[in-house]
Length: 125
Image (cartoon, rainbow, N blue to C red; front, side):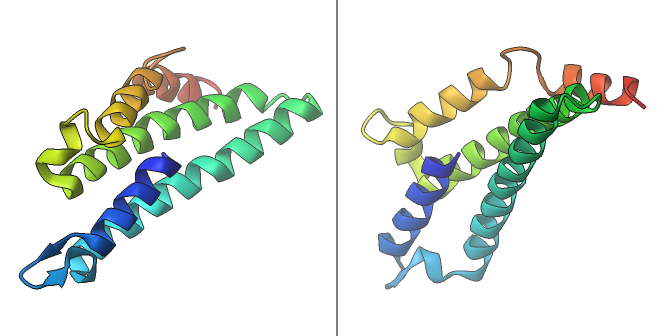
């Protein structure tokens, strides 16, 4: 996720359209901020889940399911936005964006998809 975010931001700083870098368009800036927030939420949940697991907390399984849910949701969003902001180049083999998006899609299904982990979270209540 971090690579996709950073690659997309760098691309938007250098890609020019209508005589200006596309990263200066406010709508695209909002998309990149949303990508950043999704990524940061995943990092925060990772730290929380790791702490709960190391403490042997009873909430560890719930925290891990919450993390897995967020990673699946954020991975899909960040990947889709990266591909969109790169345009047609986002799905070619010439850039790593398409490769990372495929990897994130696969990671989203390993050990249960978002629906599975959302049901797990609801069952812990």
